Length: 129
Length: 252
Image (cartoon, rainbow over all chains, first blue to last red; front, side, top):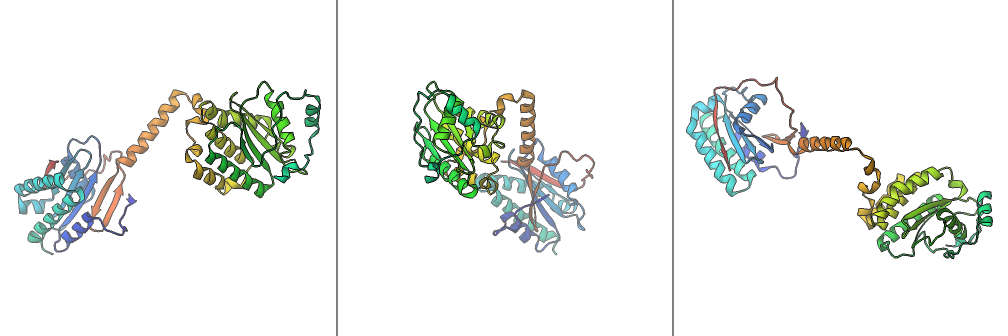
């Protein structure tokens, strides 16, 4: 890993959103932005990353990973067992739709931040800190 | 430059050559005012200014007098002999030290020669000056870029002389500030003709690999901040299975 702009004067809106989203919940949210060339299945990649990052090791199994490939313009949402049982498949589908629309209409970082905040509100409802 | 007016102590060999060679039919040009002179007008003003500044500073730092002169053509004269005559006529170098060098470029003939005084002969011996001219000057000259040619050759000349202006980066800085493109080392170095295709291919493959590593980089965001992650070349062993969760994907 190479240190990025964590010490930038202005914090990335995504980082800000994650901080805000995680504030009142035990859940964990992470975002990965990739520029891989030939990626057919972002969902598979997201699942792989989820385990690689050890995101299954939460006490309530309520971690969520948002994976966005800006090259192929595809993204995937992956939620762990705990949160998935709480919200159901429809939640992911609707969130994905909303994110897709936002990505078309506004800057990538802002669209992601909105999705993260939505996730945060959901996590806070089901897994308050 | 009054220093050039001082008589030069000429080494024995040069004296003999001067005495025995027939008087040049082409008249010798008068000594120049500055360290760089161009009778052709092909060298752009900025480069000329830069060269003069660099060579002037080199003389101040080392007392070595390096002069760069661009002439139209030899007009039938012998390259080495005529350049040496000019070198003597101009009295390049400090009288007591004989530490001067003249880089003479002949635009029409696409040839150049470096004549030097006794003190610099060990550094500027025949083999070195020949390869310097061939590798750093002639390619750009033949490509129709004389400004670049003289810039590159002068830099290499200063490097050979281990000029303090090279060590502290000033020579490059001055020349880059007047004409940055002359200072870039690109394909006009002349060495490219000798690179066989296999090396070119490997070089490109290596560059592509580096580019891939750089461009394929990913950014990972958490509440702590974000970090850049270099693409991994396949992590087969680390896959612990992920099960029981859910999610969705989409595109835009």
